[in-house]
Image (cartoon, rainbow over all chains, first blue to last red):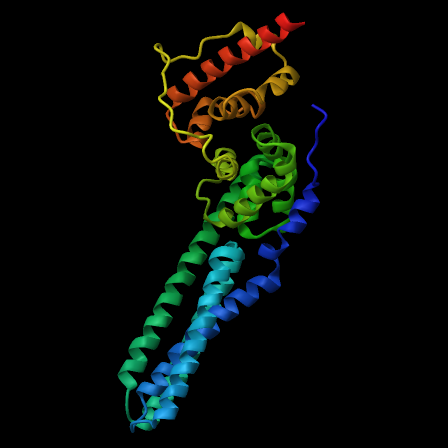
Amino acid sequence: MSEQPGRTAQEIVDRLEASLSLRARVRAVTALLAGGLGAAFLSLLWLTEPAPLPGRTRLAFALFILICLAWAGYGALLLTRKVVLFATDQVVAAWIAVAASATTTGLLAVIAAERGTGLWPVLAVGGAFVAVSGALAVRAHARRAGLLRRRHELTRRARA
Amino acid sequence: MTDELLVVRAQLGERDALAELVGRWRLPVWTYVRRMLDAERADDVAQEVWLAVVRGLPRLREPDRFTPWLFTIARRSVADRLRGEYADRSEQLVSDGTTVADPVEAMVDRAVLVGALAALPVPEREVLVLFHLEDLSLADCAQICGVPVGTVKSRLNRARRMLREHLERGVGDE
C-alpha cells in the first residue's frame, strides 16, 4: 500500500493547538471564575443593601449580573467543548478557584458586617463556593497523585 | 516506552508524551479511517479523531485500554460520515462460537486484502480492518464496535467469505 497520510505527526499536533495552548486554558478558567464569582459578588452586594435601591440602580445590578453569568457560561463552554485541562492543570485551576472564592467571600463578609445586614446569606453562598472548589481541588490532587504513582511504577518496570 | 506510560504522562500534561503518542498511532488511525472512507476525507477525519482523543484523554480511566478506546473514537468519527451504511442488520452468529481457520486467510496477503476491502459492506469491512490490519483482539474489536464477540466472529466469517468470492471472481475474470 503506497498511500500515506497527508499530515505528519507534528502537523496533527500543531492543529490541536487551539485545545492545548496555555493561553486558551487560562482564558477559559479566568472567564469561568471571574464570571461566576462576579455574579455571586454582585448578587450578594445587592441583597445586602440596607435600603431598597432605586429602579435604575436595580436594573444596572441585574444587567451586570447577566453579563457576569454570560462570561461564566462562555468559560464553561470553553472548558467543556474547546480546551483541555490535564491533571496538573486541574490542580492549578482548582486552587485558583479556592483562592478566588475565599477572597470574594471574605470581602463580601466584611462589607455585609459593616452594613450590619445579610452576613449569613454571604457566608452561606460564599461557603458553598469555597466548599465546592475545595472538593474539586481534593479530587484533582487525588487524580494527579494516582497518575504520578502509576507513572513511577511503569517507569520502574520499564527500566527493570 | 509502553503506550500506557505515554498515556499516563500525557494525562499529567506532558506535551512531549502526547506528541509521541500521536506519532506512534498516527498511521494505524489513518489506515483505519482510510480503509473505511475515501482518500479525500481520510486526513480530516483522522484529525477529528485526534481532537476527540485529546479532549477525552483527561477522562480516560484505564490507560492500559488505550488502543480499544482510541479505535472506539475513530469508529465514532467514521460512523458520523457513514450514517445510513451502518443500518441495523440481523446477525447470524456462528454455531460453534469459534472463528474457523480459513484457507483464504493464509493465502491472501495484506495488499490484496486492502484492495478488496472497498467492495465489502461497512460492518464487515470494519471488523476485517480492525482484526487483520490493526491486529486487535476479538474482544477489543467487539468493544470498539459495541457488539458481542460472537457477532464479531460472524462478521469476520462473512467478510472472509465475501472476500473469497470477490477474489475468485477476480481470478475468473483474468
